[in-house]
Length: 186
View 1: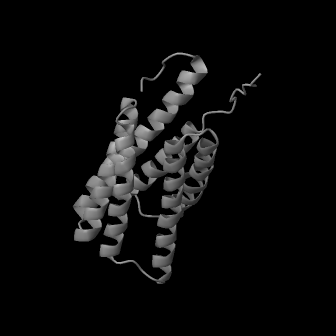
View 2: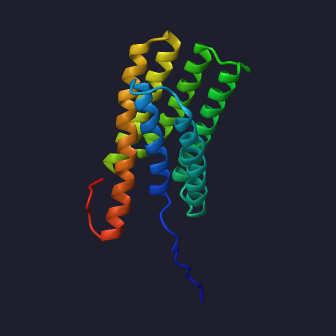
View 3: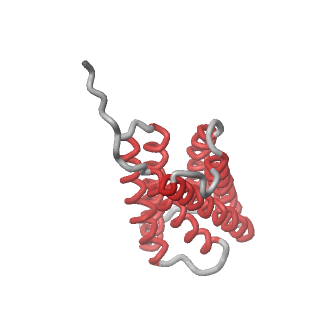
């Protein structure tokens, strides 16, 4: 007789979505011009955006969720590399120019487009999250390529939407599970 083991571990997606959403929101409040790039954003990038998303990705992997494992681990690494670029640029070591930074953002736009395509058969909120993040990376790439402050500011507003939509999805997953019914539609 085959023994069936029930998975009783928690859904790691809300953790990863909150790590991504809160960090994305904070950075894009900066991009929109509300405050300068600072240590608070860098620490969020290292720990909540980076470390926590990698943990969520590893947990998704254990659940057999290729999409979640790849997305959370990738964006955790994104935050770590972005903070690394900021720190190295600040130190004057291997400073990335505007073309390199634009290319970096476009590459992440391609990665995100792959994830966006993966959301097309799922809930609307996933399409909004990955669609807005794809647009964010394209706008950031153009911002750096053309050294355009206005494109950077527009990207900031798109990033605010992206961050808030990821946080909304996390809230929906948490509250819908906690109450056993749809509190926040997805």
